Image 1 (spheres, rainbow, N blue to C red):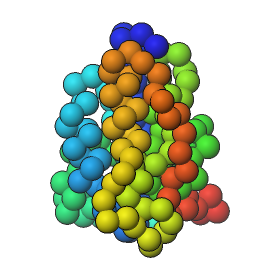
Image 2: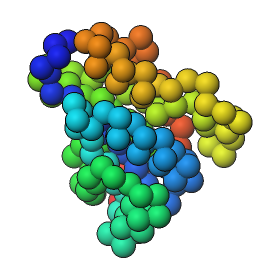
Image 3: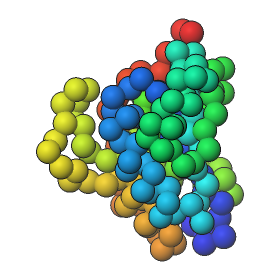
Image 4: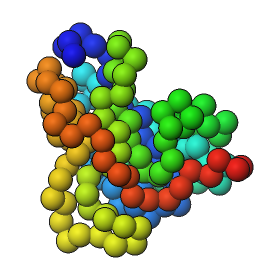
Length: 151
């Protein structure tokens, strides 16, 4: 991995998902820390995420990174994403996934959360990338709502 590689963080989101809502402040903090070197895009693949709901989500949780819909699941299929929230850290230069999975380990099953985060998976991956290193953990199991591939 070269310091000149173009890296993008794809965040698959659902405006009505409690886990997405609870992790929004962490997503914003990470975005603020790495936005100068790394691209960020929030993707809403479920048809249930209408423009009004996405707008309210962005306003309520003060989402700072750009978002768009992925109703035709083009990006979800490309990265084989299935959960919301799920993050894909993609090296656009080498066309490889550098990290995929959970943002952190606050939730260990849908509806069940820890009192505090023990592992900051996305933050650790981006820190490694910024130091021209390969992330120690390349993949984790995301916890959340499902992408509806039938809509």
